[in-house]
Structure formats: structure tokens, C-alpha cells
Image 1 (cartoon, helix red, strand yellow):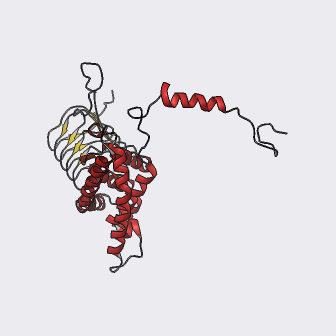
Image 2: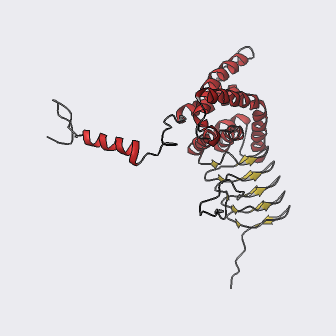
Image 3: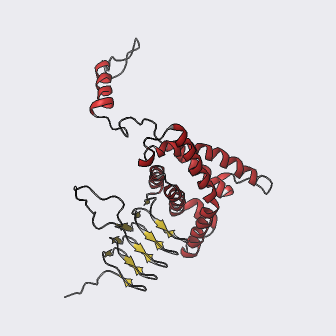
Length: 305
């Protein structure tokens, strides 16, 4: 008989009592990693995914909601979906606020009131977010010769999904819930392979073609009508360090990409530099200095000797 499996008379005895005791000691005292040593209530990745799905369905009901909607039912669907989704969101906002320094010692009533205000402001921002997302989809349709329809772009392009998540995450970040925004960004990264920090500022008509491996850092600023291809990095060249030797958080360290710039596959743009409007950055270029508007930067050509 194989001793690795439980017998019919009972399960294998693992002598778990001492293990459970040791894990409790580690969890509660010797290796306690809870926020402030006490916060147990964390935002839920699954609920936040449902929130983004619900908001997406409300913004684009027939694309991300129900394809059988008609003129009579669509407003009811949007209203009902938003009510359910915002009820879910407010609880996640309340949990995330515990991780903001200004609310670490806030009482439950204050947290609930602030979460309600943030969620209302988020809801009020949705028409503007939808307008930005429509500009992004139109940029994809205009910029990709393989694109045949808006529906194809919205359902099949990972860049579109990543940008949708980013527009929502950036709104949450701007409203003062950076932890929740970061969680939304990581969900998008898992889904698409595109990593956009929620604090990055991105203008209208943004298009990520193919997209796998794109990285956009926290303090990056991207203008309007910018196009990126796969494996582009907008990253930091160095990390500022304070007097105590720790990293300085939030210091500007990522590129500024002005309007109408195209950055091709595999390019790496590092540091707080400016890529001037209308520039083209070629594939696999390593760029660490600013370039003026209208620049065309490519790899140096090797000569045969």
C-alpha cells in the first residue's frame, strides 16, 4: 500500500498542533507584517476585479455588459450595474484608506464618510473617463492597419484593456486611494502583460500596439496621440536617496513624452528626460537624454570594414 495517501479508516496524522502554534507566534509577534501591526482587513483582489468589470459594463454596455441590450433597457442596465458596482467599491475604498497615513488612526465613521465621498467623486468622473477611452479606441483604429472595427479593438486588444484599467486606476489614485489604484493596475498587468503605474499621467488618444512587456513608471508623463509598441520601457535611470540612505518616494524620475510621439518595439527610455513632440524613437533604442521636437532617433548603423 502506498503510504503517501490516507487510508480508508482515517486521514494521515500530520502532528499539526506545534506547527499551528509556531505559525501563530510568527504571525502575531515575531514576524508580524500587518500594517501598523494590527490591520487585518485588506482590499479584495476578486471584488476589485468585479468592480472594474462592472464599471466597464456601465461605460460600454454592449461591449462589456450584455450584447442583447436595446434602447429601452440600456439605461436601466447601466443604472443597476453602477448601483451594485459602487456599493462594492465603497467597501474596498474604506479598507484601502487604512493604508493612507492621514487615515491610519481614523475611526470607522470617518473612514466610511470619506469612502462615500471618494466613491461619489469616482462615479462623477466616469463620463470624462469614457470620453478618454473612446479617444484611445479611435487612436487604435486609426493607427493599426490590422484593426477592422471598434468592437475588435475593445474585445481583442490587450492594450485597450490595459488602458481602460489605467484610466480607472488613475482616477482612484488622484482621489486619494493609491493602494486600491495599485491593486487595479496589478490586475491589469496580470491580464495583459502591460505594467502601467496608476500615478502615470497619460493624455488622450493613447495607443499601445501589441503591448506585451510595456512598462510605464510612476512619474511618467505622456502627452496626447502617443503610440507605444511592445516591450517599450519608460523607466527610471537612478533612484534618489535621502540623508538616511532610504529611497526618496515619488521624486520625478521617469520620462516626459510629448504629443504625437511614436516609440517602437523594445525601446528603453530612462530618466527624467523629455522626448519632444512629434519625435520617433526606433526599435531597441536606449535613450537617456532629452531630444527636441521632431527628432528621429534610431540605433547607430555599424560599418563593414
